[in-house]
Length: 245
Image 1 (cartoon, rainbow, N blue to C red):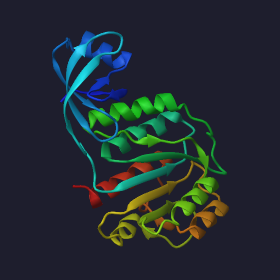
Image 2 (image 1 turned 180 degrees about the horizontal axis):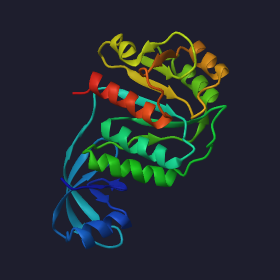
Image 3 (image 1 turned 45 degrees about the horizontal axis):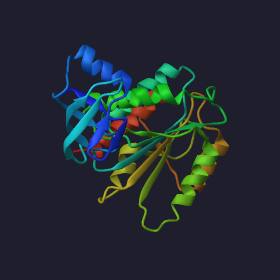
Image 4 (image 1 turned 120 degrees about the vertical axis):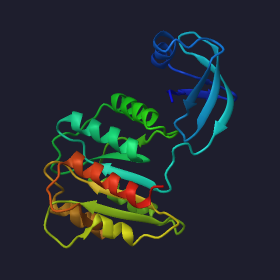
């Protein structure tokens, strides 16, 4: 199934950007009047017909399928950007394929990379969502410090209607449950899940203490010492196989 991504929707019409229009028309040889399938990035699959081809193709929306390629949980991955940004991009791609809803680049005391290029990373997320047949594109937030992220999450937890499982994976010493055991304590309705994973130099002891005091449960990902991006993908995969359809 060939999918395109709608950069805008207005009523019964949606638009492709210049890059996707070029791929649609020049590479795949679609023309006005042809039927195409489009995701809106918010979870919907749109059955469309090409109405007009300019720099941006204009499509008529014929029907809509909700929750296309969705998963029965809400997953937030707060992961420190890696020194080699290619590794972080790999994480974004694989996490999207498996199922993630929100990605937060967290900057730790030991982080070597403190900036990202969101435009490039968002293109990777869109491409991965299309490839893996998902209607929703994960939200990529602005980078935030570990402490500010933990404090912000603690404020959101004051909502009594919100059920959330908060986990922190790190290499330092201390008592930790396995990620699988921590997930096993959760019962439907499926909760929101947040997993916090630090940079190559790991979280500082102060950051771990801050997270634990805010309700994060320490977990490990097995006997091997994993790179940041490998640990993040392993966590997403464990949740996918534990709670996925």
